[in-house]
Length: 302
Image 1 (cartoon, rainbow, N blue to C red):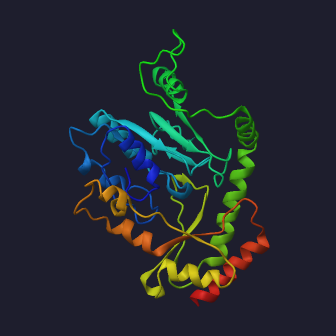
Image 2 (cartoon, one colour):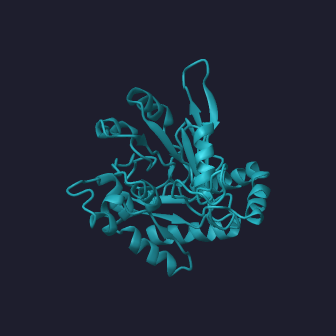
Image 3 (cartoon, rainbow, N blue to C red):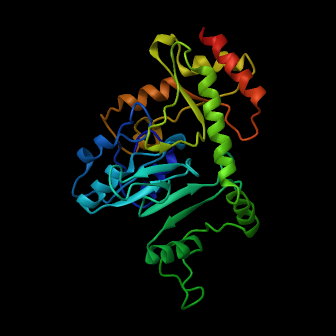
């Protein structure tokens, strides 16, 4: 799994008595560096967990190839990538665009309040394996058995979503194309207005990806002379709020206290954690507000 992600990815591994094994970030997309995965695979490896960071897909074909080579599962984290697309089987007769979340043995989505589709909280798991689907349905509902009520042979969870929440989410699913179009417009508008500012690295969309810009994330180059924390403070003084990038799992005190990741280094993740932040990216952001944000960024950096 990538070190540069939210802690819930590591928690899911630890809750199941497994050990997270970390991989550094791709310096361009900030997703897991797929070229570094194979070196981390051992005979104890059971799965690969790619995470589509900030709405840009991971290059999934090499991940799938490794999973097939080593007989591993792929747990695809699409929590930030509702509606994002990936060009699979490039250069082959069956080349095609597919949605993020359709490339793993299991895939997960978040419906947190800041996601493109939200039910306030919660999420979903997708799979094409009927046996896994049945098991997941049982786990989410306290592991009730179908053959005997209140008789439990496995520890389950209370992960049920209310019907009201589901209805809110389904209403948004019906207009996912408009939501994605709005987010991609926002990404293009930011890029057009911010390009050329010295010391500011803008998000890049790979040709095999359709980015949904869940967050419009930027990275400060060292030449800018300040880190993301200082940048955020300067923007706050101009009434523009931001959020910092993830902090790598290898740097999390709660995981280090468990003896994990001792002596491990992930220089790309450390750099982008220190130098990156997201600009206002909510669906309600107006064009005039976006212009205000861009003007503030330009004032700080030029």
